[in-house]
Image (tube, rainbow, N blue to C red):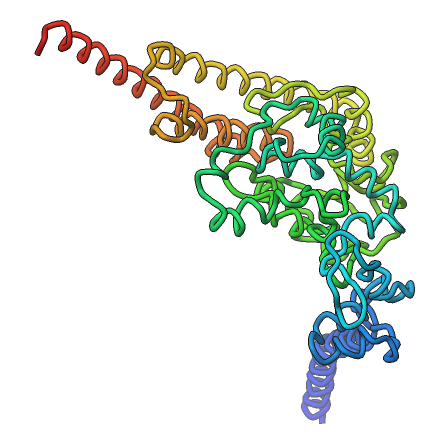
Length: 435
């Protein structure tokens, strides 16, 4: 009997253990399933419900058949939600510059900044004062074709007054329009003058036809132009701690927050737009992307911008939402020092080729001798990349895509100049000997 009771006790204990194991396994599994079901039921806030469009609108009715993708995008846009119609943006009067006849009306195939400014006056004015305006266009085409009014606007912009070179970019001319239409123009036309006299192409950053805040705020939008060996800001950002935070946590950020109200609760780390455009912390929203910059980093040898101290205050108002004043001050001192050091190294490259130029061994035609390309790459690719990398937190771009390449190109320039001078001396000696 005692043995039977002992066996029954063991069986009861065994049952309790089994039940306990099942509870430990099943309860969390049920909780996970319930949570997953809950997530699938709740609509993704980024999936904007389409607006019921007015089918009596002739544009909507026709384009539902001819370009349904455009209508689908537009139906999910803030424009449609605000009752902004196709005609509001596209339709113009007969004789309007750039307008074309279209089914009994006149339209702009691509609305100009003048049309956008009907509602977005401040944004258009800020854009016109920015690097993204005429300076971007002049960097490719030169200033020769600008009207007097556009030239005055250009010269009023910091990059225009700095004005390192009004000439049409020599590479743009050498490569020819068949290439540059798909290359340089794809970015630099952001500042192109339109037939109606307005400047710029808003759709370069605000893609048609959704005009999504999330799209405009994400760094992939800037990646369209700010990429590659001469201005790799996107790659530098992705390498930086800010970029790591974006890649690992950005799905949970508040991309549709009301403009001008952004805080660290919306964006725990910055994107390109946070630092350069968005109203964030103590900085107001601006479409002048140079408004918070202290240097002309794009130049061969960087100089301070006009009123750079005010620009610095605005940028540091963004930085101070996360960083201490001591950290920010030290960072600026160190980044300023790197900028000045890169200036020194670019000046050294200029001095290196000077003897060959003075001896008449370099032609005035750009990019017709190998030494032209090496000298250009040293400042245009590696010098600028090192500066961008320092200011944006990309150590690999400061070092291996910047300083190292500067050292290598400097050594190559010294060797090329030595060879040119030696060949010139040999030629001179041969001519003197009559041989």
